[in-house]
Image (cartoon, rainbow, N blue to C red; front, side, top):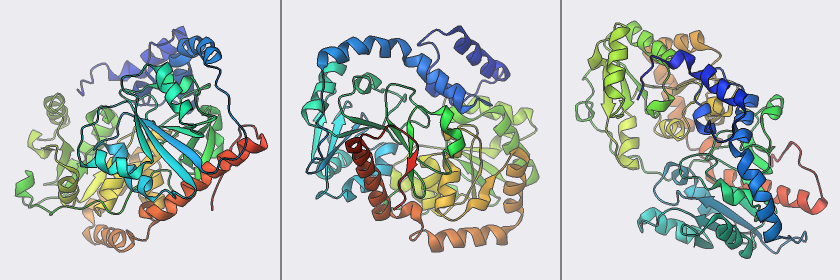
Length: 444
């Protein structure tokens, strides 16, 4: 809602909850948004959140008595666990990777605890997977048995601690290898997953103490993005509620990622670029507060323009009207960043130390634009203000993005999928060899 009167105290209030050591009180996802929090503190939060449930799961796991053969399977069976197997941001990123999996080497299953809406994306997923198992009506124990009965070798959790998660299934360890991937930008804490799929920029070796999982490094960005997503018609500025002239700063991140500090920077940018506007995604409960915050900073309320929700193709089409995308911090853009780059719009981001703060930087490296990663807030302001004031420089960036978009690693689905499969094969080889969990990379 962007009610920020008590925001300066928020991080310390959260730290106080952690210090009390009471499990289940501070959701880890909420803690990702707190400024100036370290990865180690985020790990502490995740482990406190699950501590009691993990302890309760031990007896259940003993009763289930799952046992696993260490012999190499004919095909490695991959199970993806999610409630988002429909037209959702996670699946929009992953669908082409699912479709590109090598069916000669892998048998790919979906385990869905969400509703089947029967729409086009769900049908497409049914074609991409060997099977979709509907575990939505099952208890965690029943769902874990379903994973075990399907003889899944590697179970990949696409939810983490995001909305509707069923982390309890993962706590029962129904597969010999368990992986934290894509859905949650941080560690799940000890006792849940063996690996987190990441890249060297997202989680450099020095970050290891903040993660319970071993780092499974992708060679470029950890995030997939297809190249078949249709970019709709570019509308007129008037059709999109934008003024006919003036620079368009854009951020289509959800409003919970906005902080007073980042909003200060945005208002400074609006002040430095006369006639510019800030184009945001509609946030019905926050819009009035944001307009008020702008007014307090000397910015006319009509310089904030709110864009309605629309389908993916039309959304990508209108994104082309943006001149520059501005990232949030400490919880930055994920899908919204790669969508902007796919639509040909550069993004300025400020790299922090946490996973959630480094996603846009990872994407910029994978698309050949690392110079758009700011080191701090002043660098962020200088970068964005300079691009707004130098149209030739911005045009050159956009031309580079358009020219290299189809050859950049970020959008190379085939190469991405082969690298991901290489990680899965290496995970399985390590298990057969009896290797203990450690940081490693697969870069083929």
